[in-house]
Length: 436
Picture 1: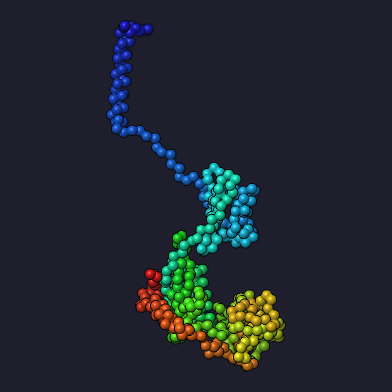
Picture 2 (picture 1 turned 135 degrees about the horizontal axis):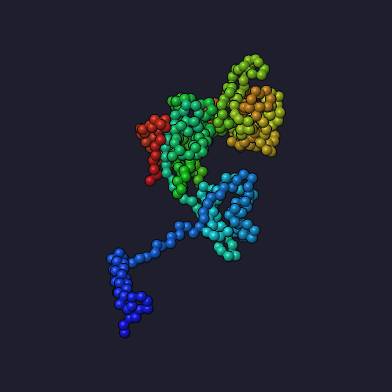
């Protein structure tokens, strides 16, 4: 049946229009086929979810409580009660400012579903929300620290800490750990060397340590294994030897304990402002015999008993100001003067232990500034305390001598492996020996 047209031009013109339209459509189909061959399938780009959670760190500020951090994480009201019921470790009354909390919250949700905090170097706490009204779950994660043995050498210019700080870069030990290393070395040689008076510029310190490193790259000081402190050209060795169920002692190269009856000094680090002997008294304005040693130190510095003893005096005593006197074995007494105050509970007749804090540095009595006046009396006679007065160290038990000798040889080989190149930027040699 012929096509009919309703309009000007009649049916022939309409047929031409239909043919042209069909041709045009065919050309479009062909062009589309050429542009997108059948072998290429058009696919929509995938929707990528970068993270389903919001994660951030929050720090416990000064004068803040745990509840303040939890509230910022949306944990309040019934959630707070549920959270606190689940934890057996977090104590809101013993939270230290500066604690960093790692918080995670599902996007679009008002309450965090995970919270983590470092409890100590070895442990991390994770609190996980179980969902609904199921409460929270507490998990303690042990942090694995890898151990390696390292050695370092420092040259004394002014004091032990400054030497270590100049010799050791941050990549070896961070600054707070370098402070800890100085204290640890002083503790090892507490009976052998007075680091406030014995060291001189040019003296050397070598130490072999265990350094610990966490998976996050944190580094901290482990144990001291061996050390060599050269004072005036004379070396003093210390080797750790464990023979009492996890309680290592330090012995010298001849197997004698570094522990003595008396400490070399009642303060770990200080400046000697006046030595034993004659001096011009700054207050009395005349020459007189100085029957002790004065240690300049900051007000409030802890004062240690240099040996086990009994308190025979603890009170005000003329020019001494606040004075403590201790009685020791073999007719020896020690005095500690100009104290700001006494240790809590200290009283006459009390037994005290070596290294126990008995008082604090002050400036009472005839004193021009905060310092400790320390006296060492033998049978009532003021004496300049020397190493010979500290008593002989106990040697390694005979049955363990062979084991100690083996340990000493091994540690000495690691402590002094041979010439180590000195880096000018560090001013001292820093080497490493990994523990196989």
